[in-house]
Image 1 (cartoon, rainbow, N blue to C red):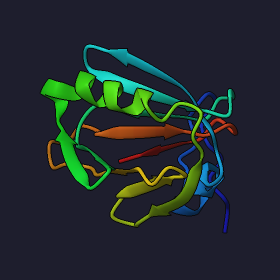
Image 2 (tube, rainbow, N blue to C red):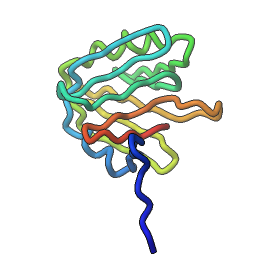
Image 3 (cartoon, rainbow, N blue to C red):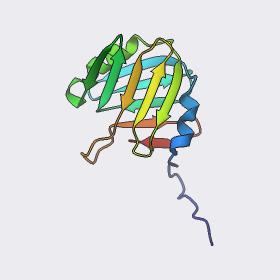
Amino acid sequence: MIAEVPAEGSIPFASVTDLAVLKGAELTHVSVWKYGVTLGFNDEPLTITVENNAEFQSQGRTEIFNQEIIIGFGARMLSLVGRRVSDMQATEGKTVALSFDDGARLVLRPDDSGYESYTVNLPNGSIFIG
């Protein structure tokens, strides 16, 4: 059996287990633009870009953010700068949940639109798309 070699310049896809690198990571920056929010961790190339289907839970409240109000999600995430991910869960269905050390929780889910709701870029150059 011959192993497939990725094409020159292709981006490798990460698995659910590769996302474990997020556990213990510190949220160091939040970038907001019209169509999305990028969360940066550990001041390194470890980012999550969210464009749709973000759920933010804090102090007993749950807020759901879609594409039209994604800027509001960015505003909520600013409160977590400097916080660490205390727990990370990911499913084969591509739902990712991050719990932070202050009790806040972020849940990202793919949708049925055919477009990604979020991408996770890992320090090794691989990506996970949901």
